[in-house]
Length: 77
Image 1 (cartoon, rainbow, N blue to C red):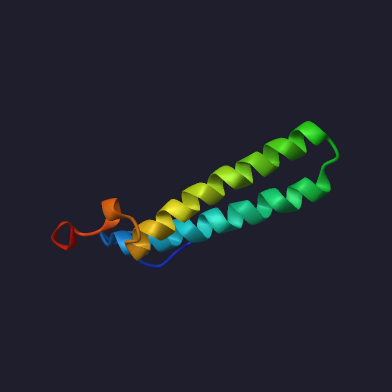
Image 2 (cartoon, one colour):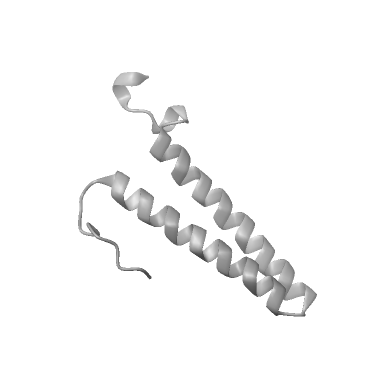
């Protein structure tokens, strides 16, 4: 895990950004490992993991951009 500045901040935006970067790093790692291993079942597991984490990363991105109604401030609804 990387040492991010402001890790103790109460600001959700800071943690959201950090988590998105961590997930992006993990997705890259999974894709690199797909090329390294030869077992098809494990390659499929790595690809599935990358897809699942990619979906979670997208959810955090939508939160940070307030793209979904659920992530918009109460006053904006």
